Amino acid sequence: MVMMKNIVLIGLPGSGKSTLGKLLADELNCTYYDMDCVIEDNLNQSIISIFKDKGEAYFREIEYNVADKITKHNQASVIATGGGVVTMQKTMVVLKENGYTIFLNRPLNKIYADIETKNRPLLRDNIFRLESLYNQRIHLYREYADYIIDNNGEINNCLDKLIEVSNKILLANT
Ligand SMILES: Nc1ncnc2c1ncn2[C@@H]1O[C@H](COP(=O)(O)OP(=O)(O)OP(=O)(O)O)[C@@H](O)[C@H]1O
Ligand SMILES: O=C(O)C1=C[C@@H](O)[C@@H](O)[C@H](O)C1
Ligand SMILES: [Mg+2]
Image (tube, rainbow, N blue to C red):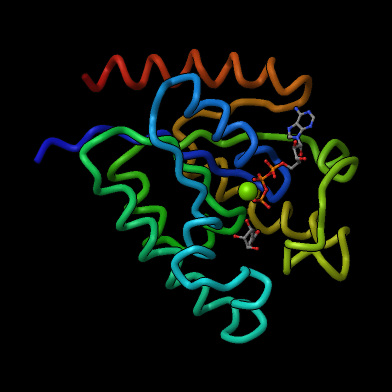
């Protein structure tokens, strides 16, 4: 089967992957997957409670299985990943084998301004953990990124840049 290339958004929690991923998929008329939502639907459990009951290592295995499954459809999709997907190499391997990754680079101060922490287990008790997540992960986001797009202004401005890059990717893979 010929695999179409997916558009895979990576970046810190609050960088805009879910919001912009949905808008991008609508614009491109593609299927949209939000990996966090797929996991919650499959397990019928919230991410916060998966972390609490089974721990992060278990969540990362589920995240890998979901990535493996949703990337193997024969239509290009837009995939919003969870913020920590870059911490599991095998998950990044399947995502990159079947798609192009775009790192949504949003400045920390902008994320702090509007992130909702109650459903984000790693940030719930201390929003300033985001800074240590940034320090731990920034090299991974950069290393795994096929493209880097700054999200430092209006949402629509970033969406326009995403559409331009995605159209290039999709055109090159038809
Ligand atoms: N350029 C922007 N201007 C204003 N608000 C923005 C911008 N980009 C993202 N946001 C807002 O930031 C918040 C976090 O975005 P979103 O939930 O899409 O992040 P995420 O990357 O999916 O996070 P997570 O990894 O935790 O799922 C949302 O309220 C979103 O509307
Ligand atoms: O940054 C992270 O490690 C996470 C981000 C969320 O999208 C979820 O995938 C989960 O809360 C873990
Ligand atoms: Mg999200």
